[in-house]
Image 1 (cartoon, one colour):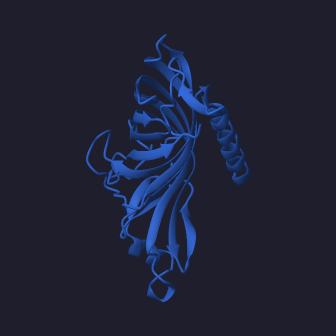
Image 2 (cartoon, helix red, strand yellow; image 1 turned 120 degrees about the vertical axis):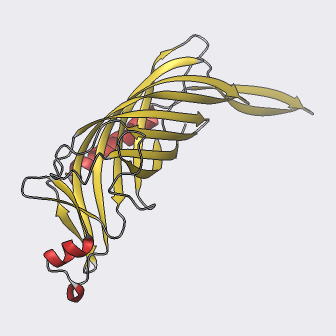
Image 3 (cartoon, helix red, strand yellow; image 1 turned 45 degrees about the horizontal axis):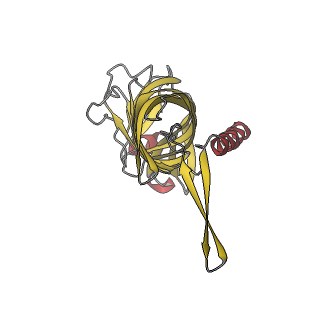
Length: 261
């Protein structure tokens, strides 16, 4: 799995480099007192779309109870984050370069840190349920004499397929674009962890999660900087405890990143 992950990251990083927006170079030659002065100016080609998603990004994560709903019953700490890569390419572009459709591929790694007294575990039937860290520590023999578990988190990888409709305009010879769209997400490597005894331990890698998700996306790009908002429209987990204490869990992300031309 580690070799696959490293290969995927290298592939997406390479694709991002070669999928950048085209620019044209304008060379202006001026003569001053017999000396030739050369000025090189790069101008954005107006009939090309800028990338609606960042080549590399960092995002803040939260869990919502349903799409755009209140905070989920498994609340996250403010330190929860995601990093990732996108490689996007236009599919359709209007003659003036003001409207178009872009698609691409992405890969991400999410770390969902839970509040201090919560942990995500599964029962014998793979039903996901919320457990207190103290109860989990006592159950596993990690009581006061063995260092109570003091932090838990859910980690997973995702491959992403976004499709964005965007409009763009020029601001001081630099492109600015507003894009909206949808994204298919394939999750893998989903594991629940806890830290105790000075190291990280796997609680479970047998969560019955939904490997395929569907997200809504909105982004604002200016030159090489991009901010975006992603909302999961589908639940992350297929099977829950009988009392449904976990409820719906939809991932939300607010991210910021760059494209390097």
